[in-house]
Image (cartoon, rainbow, N blue to C red; front, side, top):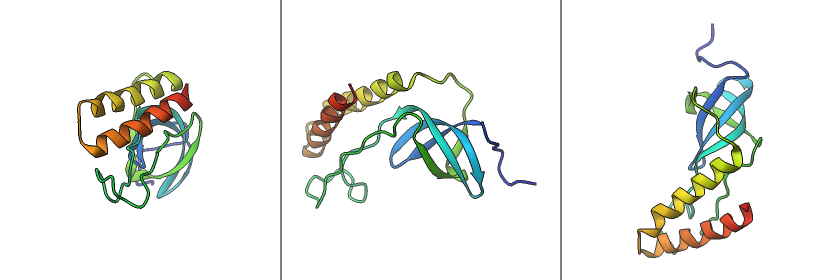
Length: 127
């Protein structure tokens, strides 16, 4: 008997390095699963995750969203069953980055401005 409800081929939702994605389980090796990325729900945050909302850090990270069909290894506890519509990857990526940009544009602090710069660069690269 397994201690998780997942099987290979299941469509799931998972977080990964501050982003959120829809994916398909391609292999199971409890306590982890290999997941193929199908769509982006939330674009990853920019900056140093260990010092959130700080600009003056040794490296202000630019974080790209995971690529279409990129495979990640995720802990089973981080997976959630997903039964909704799976959007087109490119459309989901565009929606996710546009939403992050929209949220940051309302802020006037230094961190938001820097994160917005990085997202605008990524948006051009994604096009």
